[in-house]
Every structure is written in C-alpha cells, then in structure tokens.
Amino acid sequence: MNEKQEIDREKDETEFSREVGAKAARKLKARRNPTPGLWSGLGMMGLIGWSVVVPTLLGAALGIWLDKHYAGKHPWTLALLIAGLSIGCLNAWLWVAREDQAMREEDEGKNDD
Image (cartoon, rainbow, N blue to C red; front, side, top):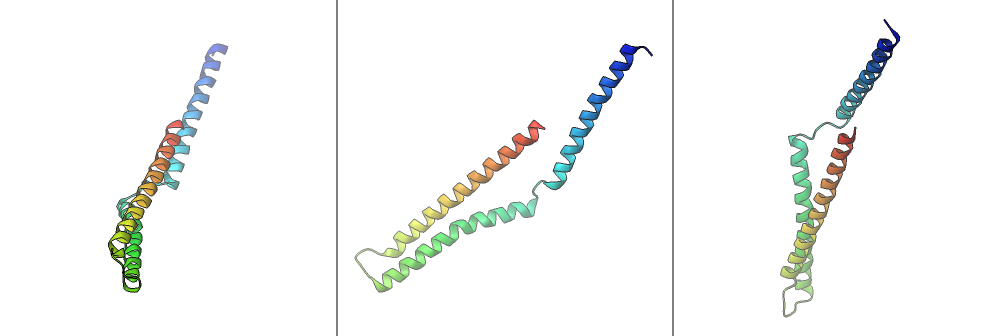
C-alpha cells in the first residue's frame, strides 16, 4: 500500500468511529428516556383534569360557605365556581404549554446530536 491509501483508510476509520459513537450515544440516551406510553398519557390527562377540578371545587365550596354565612343580593357560589374554573383552566393551559416547550427543546437536542 502506498502512503495516500493508508491516509485515506485512517480517515475512513475515524469517520466510521465517530458515526458509531454517535449512534451508540443516541441509543443510550433513548434507553434512559423511553418514549412515553399509554399509561403515561393517561396519567398526564388525569393530572391536567385534577388541575382544573380542584380549583373549581374549592371555589364552589368557598361560595357555599360565604352564601351560608354572609348571604347577600348575589350568590357567591356561582361567581366563585366560575372563578375557580377559570383559574383551573389557566393553570392547565400553562402546564401544558410548559410541557410542550420542554418536549420541543428535547426534540431539538436530539436533532442536534
């Protein structure tokens, strides 16, 4: 073999080594962070549901208590129920937006590898 062929062969080996190393790193990262399954999705839906339900029920309970103890011209229950529902929906929306942003950043990180 001449010198040029040997240099080309070494160059090919280093490129091949880098590719193999990159693929191995991706596989290891995928094992550490598996793709979420069905149960993970159902758990997330439950978490989002509770983040809406809890403030709604708290608002309704506070409204009922206020109506019993401080009765007025307008019922507190409906107003605080709507306020709790609004707060819960805002909370859920912000949580989903934050999770979506985290997933996008993770995908961008995978694409950079």
